[in-house]
Image (cartoon, rainbow, N blue to C red; front, side, top):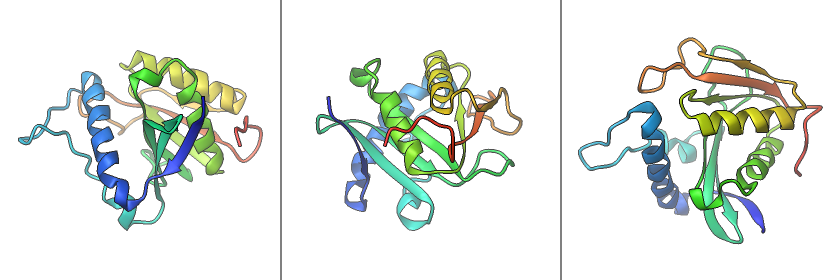
Length: 175
């Protein structure tokens, strides 16, 4: 199995938009979002990934087939100083529980050295398990998790749990 992390070019923005719809549909079971009048969820910041600095989008492929995406920026969810935030991360069902997500996100972390934060929805129990496992393993248990971090509400009003870690040293590299 060959897993690649490929930057999303402007010419592939519609492909990412389509994958974001699948991601938002799945996530709506946790955050209770509704579709708009066109039957879409929409992603307000998608265009910003090509018009602003410090936003990066990547496709995750398995054997040259789309398997998901990762989106990184430097716009933290909290007032704490960090360099990078994992804005979105999605692996399609077919590729879950095969190590694809773990491998891909560790590669993405390795691409951006510094202080990280990532937010998870506590009702998404599969995500809770995944992120607890991945962040713990990647950082050698050198991270901080703040549950129900103030002012990090999802659309349903649930406060997000936020991980903080620094991968400048002491993290498992996948490069």
